[in-house]
Amino acid sequence: MQSTRIPATIISGFLGAGKTTLLRSLMEKSTHKKIAIIVNEFGSLGIDGDILKNCGVPGCTEDNIVELANGCICCTVADEFLPTMEALLDRKDPPEHIIIETSGLALPKPLIKAFNWPSIKTRMTVDGVVTLVDSPAVLAGRFADDPEAVAQQRAADPSLDHDNPLHEVFEDQLCSADLIILNKVDLITPEQAQQLTQDIQKEIPKAVKIIQASNGQVDPEIILGINAGAEDDLQSRPSHHDGEGEDHEHDDFTSFVVTIPTANDPESLVQKLIQVANTYDILRIKGYVNIANKPMRLEIHGVGQRFNYHFDRAWRADESRESKLIIIGETGIDQEAIQSSLQ
Ligand SMILES: Nc1nc2c(ncn2[C@@H]2O[C@H](COP(=O)(O)OP(=O)(O)OP(=O)(O)O)[C@@H](O)[C@H]2O)c(=O)[nH]1
Image 1 (cartoon, protein in one colour):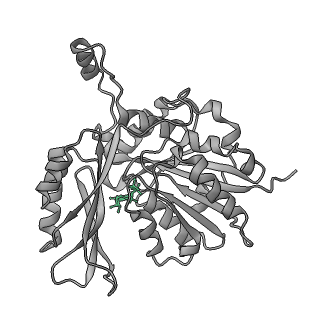
Image 2 (tube, protein in one colour):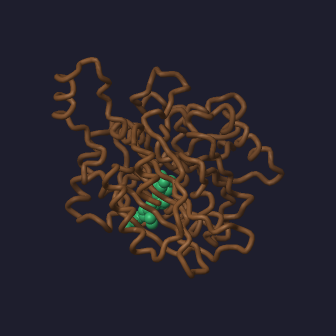
């Protein structure tokens, strides 16, 4: 019998891998489907939802985009995720497809498991988990497990916890995938892309298609309609966090918001941000900034030390032109020093 369950696609990938960019491009290209989007972000500013709502694509309306901002989706399943899904399903005119953009730190497996909850199991299915890879960041060794460093730490203090949280999140996201997209291939060579494909194939337990993309430009037909039924296939998706129960914490990572003064120009601000990101090993910076004498607000993205920016829209008369950046890093990052060096 043909399944009448509504398919849901989970978009996973580390901080800044290009999930929102992919989603926007998908929405631009797949006008024929009634798609609802769930956006979950690590941090309290809700920038991804804002970007999508302002992107001008016909399907990206306030109605179709639901933001889940209170913590990582994989930890708030019962309180937030399930009620949101039920509300979508109960709409008079329910969506034909749901796309969930998880936070860059989310582990996909607890979310896939949530689709087995009785309240939605008969009504929805996970069509596919699509994991984006920040190709240049991986090649730069951002997620590498450094066996030498671990051995040295062990020798110095065997009682310490030697996990590499970046590596674990990265591997969990790869191992949950039904499709892997090597994104940002515009920033690497074809040989590097080929090498990366081979390296990733070795890292994952099953054969998964790995494709390449720049700026999330992928045909929606490849991403939507995978028909994986991932919630019935959990055993093939091993996780570093198997056996921890539903309630693991993201205490390896932290986020905070910094309000900075109006900047004179984008270039000098970005130079300063690069320097701060470098000094304090910041994983992700994003936000909106007021530039002196400009009617438009500046949207800024930093992933590691790579920054992009553009003026996204005019400041509205009813909003204060505050410059706010969300900063995400590993726990222990020096918040005070970052705050003061950005003033
Ligand atoms: N050069 C290049 N930049 C890209 C590509 N895809 C995304 N970016 C840029 O990378 C930055 C992060 O992209 P996002 O789409 O916001 O990434 P994300 O995964 O949604 O980020 P988080 O939600 O913070 O985890 C932005 O400045 C994008 O313009 C790509 O293929 N090539």
